[in-house]
Image (tube, rainbow, N blue to C red; front, side, top):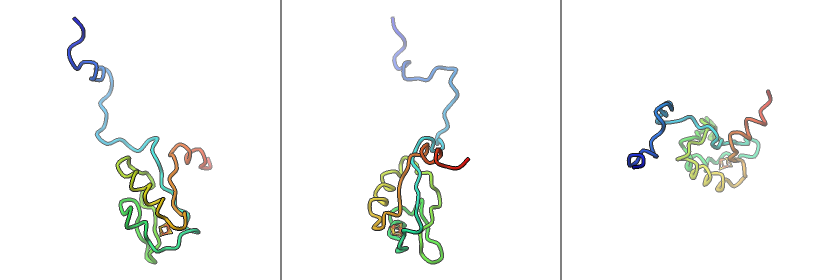
Length: 100
Ligand code: SF4
């Protein structure tokens, strides 16, 4: 007789419990080039979870880590930006480019 039904789907007893919400490791990060931005704030309406308007209406990236559930919205905002001022980069790529 083999293992109990569903046993293969369970983590081994020695593995630590996973947090319900993991930090965005290996995900995407949102970058904004303020010199290219026209400041009309189109993106803020599309991605208000990560972008906020500063006092003159220009967008500011409030949280650069793009949660997996927001990635499709972030892609839409990047695609819709008329000045190509927004972009999504893999987290590891951005970390590799950061000065140490
Ligand atoms: S859509 Fe692009 S150009 Fe317009 S405010 Fe946002 S980042 Fe700036």
